[in-house]
Image (cartoon, rainbow over all chains, first blue to last red; front, side):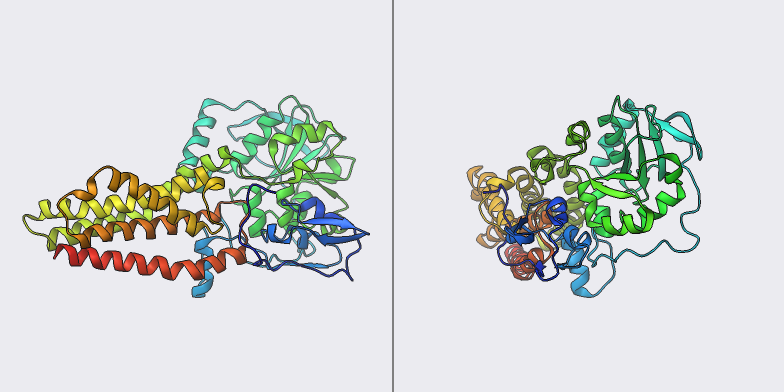
Length: 89
Length: 370
C-alpha cells in the first residue's frame, strides 16, 4: 500500500500489448511504478496510481503506450475549459 | 509549479540553424574560472553556495524574484572533468543548478544546463521545455561530442516526461540514462555504476517537500484573497449601522477572518497533513480542514457567541468551507501523484459546490447586515 492514492478509475493510460516489445523503459521512467514486465510485456500493475505525466509514452519506442498527459493544475484546467491560452501557475 | 496542459510534442530533428556553437558566459557570479577543452574555455563552478545564494533560495520560496532566477544554459565544468567524465543534464532554474552542484561536491563532471526558462526539471519537462529538442540543440551548441569521448548522458528521471531517450540516441548518438528521481540519491547512483534501486525510481511526497511549498501557496492565495477582503470591508462600511469605519470593522472583519481561515486550511493545513486527512479528493480534504479550523477558531474560541445575526454567523461558515475547499483543490497542482483527468473530474464536481457556497455565504452575509 502506498502513502498516497488519488481518485480511482480516472486515468487515460493505455498499453497496446501487440506493439509492446518488453523493453522495460516504462518501468524505468514511471515515478509511481505503474508498470511491471511479465512474459516480456508491460503490464499496468497499478494503473490507478498513474499521474498522467506522460514519461512512459514519451519513452516508448514503439508507441505502445498512450495517455492524455499533462499536469493536474487548477488554473490550467480552467483556462482549458474556458478555451483560453494561458499560463498555469 | 508551472505547467501547461498539452500533449507533448514528438521529438523532431534539430531545425536548421539551431544549436549554433555557444558556451555560457564565465562572467556569472557563481563561476570560479574556466577550464580548457577541445571546444574552448568552459566555465567552471564550485560546490559551495554563498550566503547570498542561500538568501536567494529563501526569497524564491516566498515567490520573490522567482521569475528571473536563472543561470545561462549550456555546458559547465565542476571540479576537474576530462574526456571520460559523466555529463549530467539539468534545468536552468538557479535553485536546481545550485542544489545539483552542491550535492556533487568533490566530484569532477560536466553539467549540461538546458534552457527551461528558469523552471525546474519536472515542471519544465511537463511543458516540453526540458525536452528532446532542447537537449539535442544544447548538445550541438556545446559541441559535446568533442568535449567527451563517451556517448552517455545522465538525465534526471523526472525529465523523462519531456525527453524521448530513443529519439536523442537516434539524432545525436548520445544514449540517455535516467538517473534517480531525487537529487540526494544521485551520489549513490553514480557510486553504484549508474544503477538506481527500485526505491530511487519512486516519487514520494515527504513532509519537508510539502512544507517548502507552503510559502508560495500562501502568497498566491493572498493575491486572490486580499481583494475579496477589501470588498467585505467596503460593503460592510456602506451597509452597516454607525460610522463607515465602525461598520466596516464590525461586519467586515469576521468574514475576512473566515476567508483567512479558509486559506489557512487549504494552503497550509492541507499540505502539512496531506497523508492523514480523510478523503481522496483534495477539495474534500480542504473542506474538512476548513470545518475543523472553523470550529477551533470561531466556535471553541467563543467568537460565534458574539452579537451577530444568525445569517452572518452562517455566512462565515460557508465562506470558510468554500475557500478551504478551493485552495485545498489548488494544491493538486503542486502534488506529485494527482492526474490531469482526476483533477478535471474533481473540479467539475467541486467547483459548482464551492461557487454556490461562496455565493450563498456572501448573500447571507449581506442579508445579515442590512
